[in-house]
Length: 254
Image (cartoon, rainbow, N blue to C red; front, side, top):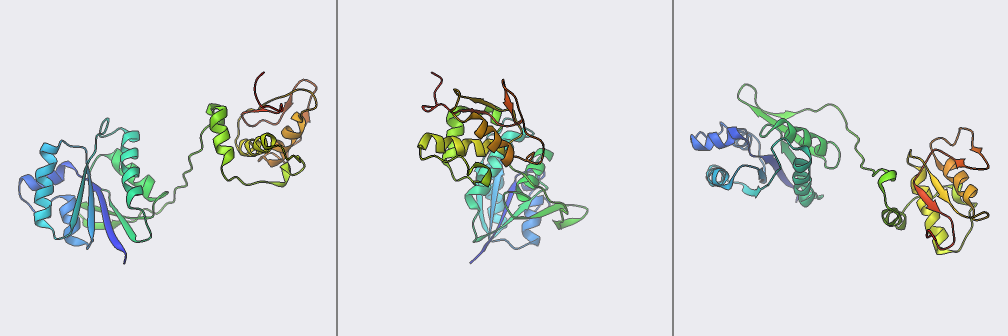
């Protein structure tokens, strides 16, 4: 069985509708009166003194399950804290058995922007909006967003890079000619492959004969610039890529 769940911030108009005891005048109560949901999950950045009476009033007005979360934000327009709170909530309910809907109208423009970002990228959501002029409508957001978080390679420590490399990563033919059974070298190959996909400078350290140019050529060949000339010099070997790799056997700085 699939549950149809509506998620929303509580807005000022919602609180005022409860204070005046005007059912269906606020965006949330109006939406619940117009569209059937099995459950509503509400996030609130107002004080509990204001929000708790509203929750009691809404539960009295509706027959559906009302779940309520008090959220501490740096401010109602602080994108990062809004994103973290919204993402945490959506992640907790994301499942094949949940049909997610998001009400955009309540809250600040920053809250609305974060809902759209999350509902068009990480979570498949149907959007609703409510206004006195137009009533309750399904919001047709006719554009797609592609969002991927990739930490800058220049900000990664050796430990963080190792953690990335220890995960599952694809391998291309560019690295197949580096043949080794040494676990340290295998780890370096995985690191190099991860870094080849990123457009950042590279520093490869190692004594003569440890395979520096092999790694640089492999990074170049696995990169988006593999169709460009590879240029090597006596003092530096550069494909304009990736982080730091140490090809010495023990992998340290000694």
